[in-house]
Image: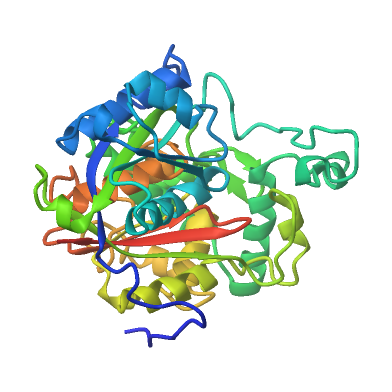
Length: 404
């Protein structure tokens, strides 16, 4: 087991097992919902609230992702929330879901709210395609909106896929990582999705030959190294652990939440992270150290994990960052079979961002709850502890959830 390290200024047991996720909900994952993001958010939220055995007017806190186009007050009005006592937002994209759990727990433990709704809703295929080149600078000044994109876009660095391709190339050169090893990650996610009825890729089987034959999008990353483009929404409800005991489903306790930044932290949305001395060092090294310190357990004790997989390389790098394998050995670890459903550490059991749906990782939280309730389509027998990680850059997040 990984030796536990204390983190200065952090009280390890302040959060431990004091809050729980008691409700989960989601919409269909599709390529064209034909509905507004608010409608999707409302559907997923109503499902989560009902799953928790609550009524909408019992929700008094709402937290959103910074990238969400649905404002918390708009969702509250749509749901019929009587009184909103707490609201907040956490980070862009995949960074948000695990951080949302931490913010919700803070609001509950400080007495600012009782039942907090977390959501992510997007038309990520039919409306805003996050994989496309975007000009986030927004203003004709240096550092417009803090993205610093204007320093990179003129030179052809336009997308997240290109950025992670550079990181993947570096990992391959430094550690000998191969395309087949990245392909092993794509394959296990697809195999899990094939047995998950609601997954976008439920009926799309894939072999390693299919993976290797797929076209390069940003070399060395191929089509199947990329996450999906998805229309859909997911939501969860968090409350205090003592109240969770009276709710319909087996509570899933929030054991710990860990956030962190990479070495040599830079500003901007994405591209400035490539200016660091070590571009394969992820924020998970810091986030993981905080997570394990707060949780009182180590990586060897995890039964199942939902690892943020915007790209196969981001998944691989987080395996290393959170101590699930030694640094530089993510490729052989992926190819060993250890991460498959019958391996020592099954991951992304519904298919993840690459084959279930891309709801910026909120679907990972929902699947973690299913695993710990023992109701998942691809169920890990006897699962008690589940690691969830969030977007690998520019900062990182993680949560450890436990079956009560």
